Image 1 (cartoon, rainbow, N blue to C red):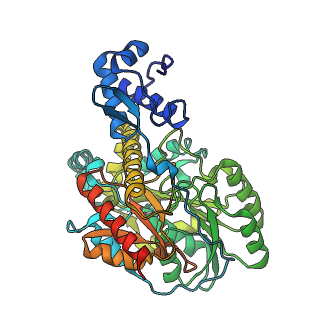
Image 2 (image 1 turned 45 degrees about the horizontal axis):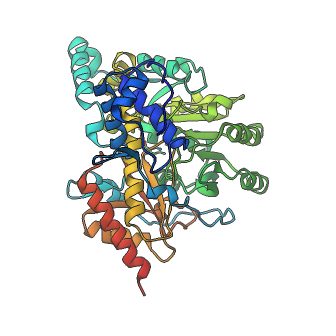
Image 3 (image 1 turned 30 degrees about the vertical axis):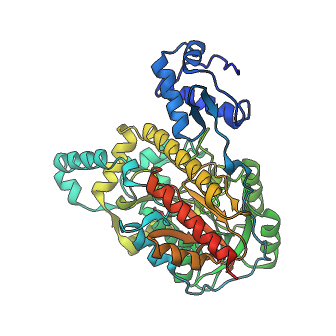
Length: 485
Ligand SMILES: Cc1ncc(COP(=O)(O)O)c(C=O)c1O
């Protein structure tokens, strides 16, 4: 029976979660393997010098994460996970080809289905409201409105609330950046930040490098701005193919690169630091702006927050965009931009596009960051996303047809799934909708028209029997399509 070393006392947070975290580490680094018995609760409590209820809580947390299971009269064992045997998704690596977008649009349906309780929400990449601090934010906003009624109804003019910008500057140390408050501007979500960045750096008809696959919102903004995409394939673990990028930059006049290096949507990769540096060395000296979408940067499942590309920016060529849509409140529409060399121009563009931001939500988010326990909230949110994703991976591995590929995101809340080649994900999307289930079909993410046999699954909702049943239904539908004559 394995013995656990004495685990250091917690620096912060509940003891049982720290203990669960260390045992989880042992399971993930294979010190404890699937099928191994873990120490009894009493034994573990004695080893770690904690009470039996604390040890029990740690085990309960590991059970919820799907990592251990109790067997009647035998104790606790490391669960055998089918998902670990599933390969990573692959996809063809087509030569980069400039694309004018067609008008495939299950996108509108996807967004409207998300708010409709008739659908199980596995489509849009959005957290369940029950995981977000809605009540606390509302209380904070009410208190601010009472305290400063005049300011609350006034414009939050450019560059946006200084209180929020100071909090962003403080947090930018975690991103490896040390930005100043006056290097930020507050925006209406990350979407506005990205649109402004493209307007500041490109003219209609220009070509923009994007990852393939990529978040469909980027394709939409390119299309509406009459820009062309030059999709460069990504590796599911390390991000954009730098060799292909180098070749493409030699052959094509590129106006900007639009990238999601931290916990990419849809594939979940985290670009390693050496590759981030190499990317900056490749693109920075050419004077090409890099628009970095860091929407998911705060959502690592384990360890420390990854650094942004902007941390490696020596000449102001990275325009960093982000928001609090996946962490606090998508409906508040609070995002930000740090525009490097283009910052002054971005402020002028923001002025003519929306003049100001909504004051009360901005101040509420600023106050939450300052005194509301944002870091504590992030810790529990990351844990929830991680556990929901583990459940989703297991459920998919158990019920989808053989031969699938499944991403292993180190952060984020979406899972990218490659289905057998014969499965048309648009047809699967339609059949799933008819069964009351929303999923995101692969072609939405493929600026070069591929990913026909891929789907993306949202893991933003607490695991439930309804979600479990829905994944089984999806598996059944995918099997039917795979076997279709
Ligand atoms: C990569 C990425 N960027 C931006 C957004 C949109 O963010 P916001 O709601 O802040 O506009 C999303 C939403 O799914 C996203 O996945």
